Image (cartoon, rainbow over all chains, first blue to last red; front, side, top):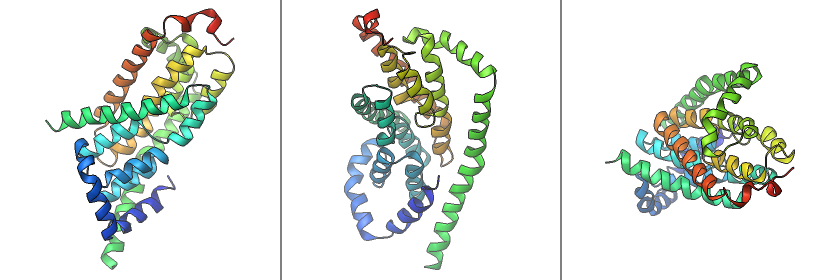
Length: 120
Length: 153
């Protein structure tokens, strides 16, 4: 929750820089496979490494359309916060690395399916 | 410059307000549910729903706690059940696979719903996928992993 304030402000400021736009444009073709905007790449990195509150702050700062939010919600809902949750899975004596790999694979695959279905 | 700061402040204020007003009360309500005696009955009823997917009754506490509250928030229950021997190795794999895909179903869904996402699409997609993946895993591991010698007792 507390992470949302700095992330939202940081991303809102960064968005106005040419460097951010340059990076977003580089990622746009890949992200468009999931019908997501270029800045989704940042939301995905933040969501996978930090948590969903931070990712939602990035997305809110980008003012995405509802369909893109839903697709991101599916990908990140499945695959997020891997450092913290991976540590807990290890504590559970579950195969943490395999599970993280599975979550990333399932998350992006499911997100792709949902994106295609929503954009028929 | 002034307009930019106003834009950011309004956007951020709106986001925080939505998260506070919608998510916080629900998390408090969920915490209240956990302390009720009928939550135990709810968990027992879960057995009938989840048994076809390979889950045994002892896994219900971890499964429903994780599903409702999340992996980080439910970590206490998840770790203690796994380590105490209440769950055999195969159950730990099934529970962690299911929860990996689908956990904290209220909080995660609402977070994206308050910024415009479709809650029912996100819930349905995650829940169905978690059930299918667990079912496949349960079928694949039915052989050696259910031998008594494999159970962590």
